[in-house]
Length: 344
Image (tube, rainbow, N blue to C red; front, side, top):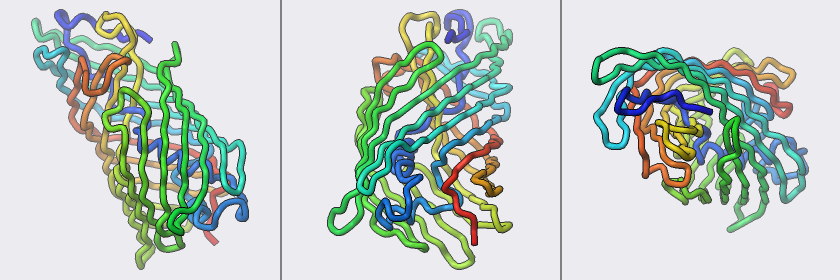
């Protein structure tokens, strides 16, 4: 995967992407929930069932989506050099996510996950010396796979889910990084009206900024069928079922994308690009029956940070930083979930 960028002395670096891969906490949510999918009613504790018996589950067996981002401008700098500017005139992503369950027992389960992203971008940037504009088209492939183990137990008379995961990611050229995730999540409450958990996430990855993350989730159904869904630090949404088999969600979600770069700025070695975003807007999901769910997402995407760093170093030890403006996005998706439940 070759990044089509010239030396900084000749032209400015474009802002590379506008997403990051699944953030560590988003991925942890998948580890906690996906091992439960596919369980029979008498195969796991009742409080776990309260989380997965949902017509619109957070994690689905198969999900395919396409994301289109509107044109937006950016500022960027390389190795403490002068700040340059440009514009992403077209950017899109196609994503495929698969979450199979392999073994399901009363006290434990073994599952896997596979994620693939194809990313295309067209960048128009200006040479700081002669103000000439250059247009560069690039595309990237990124994939991540994991093997996940979950164990269900009790602590202080509360249900606890312990999970561990071995994760490997890479590009179309190589497998690049092996990571580990360890979680402990206590279910404080789980019934038809209120669900609440607390937990800890441990990330085994030298590039991570925070190796241990506390987590908290709270979901509550109010009168009028409005639901507040809080998962810190991943999302804050207000949800309401509409049209019989539809659901509308309003709020914000943390998202991101990561890719590997080869010959970045004509330098040797493998680099990694990560970008963290906040998507604020509306989500509409519709259950078509037959285990199929369609999704439309739209709103404003704001990027909190986007950096390039050597693969062997951390996110804080970066060589390139991009600061894009906010941009509107449109996401269309279809998912298959054989355990979704239609409203009776």
